[in-house]
Amino acid sequence: ERARAWRQAGVEHVIVKRSRDREASGDLSWKSEDMDRVDELAAMGFTVTITGSLSPVDLPAFAGREVGIVIAGRAIVAAEEPAHAAAELSEWAAALPPFVTLVVSVSPAVAQVPVEAWETIFARADVVTMNDWEATTLADVLERNKPGSTIRSYMRPDAATVRRLGGTGCHLPVNADA
Image (cartoon, rainbow, N blue to C red; front, top):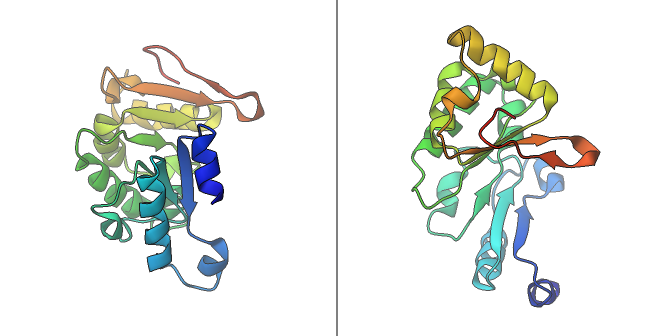
């Protein structure tokens, strides 16, 4: 009922998150009630984001569902092998259909992600977000791989970068590195 009121008020985007309580108890599954909620919200016209320690293993469960955005940050940061997790996610992202908007949020594990994963995911990304530390670290990693390169040189020309500034908001540079 609350979601209908939000929709009538003009809200267009909702997030469905796997419960941290269930995660803490070792239950990393997406239940049928979670899937029903995704379907119900999408049917109301919302853009639905899914999150909650997602990994590539979870993604097939959402095939055929109207999911607009997938957030999978902790799947990399908390992985036993962050480089492997990042590579899996980048391959999945590269295979997304062109009508899906791919937003990549550079994580604190930026230095643990193989350059090949960044090359794959940035070639497909529509938007890349990062904070100051992540931008500096990523620029150093990429420059060591290809001297004279910038973050932007790994991205599509039409992709956007967003610099996250914490409590002060975001900055959207035009045709420049974040």
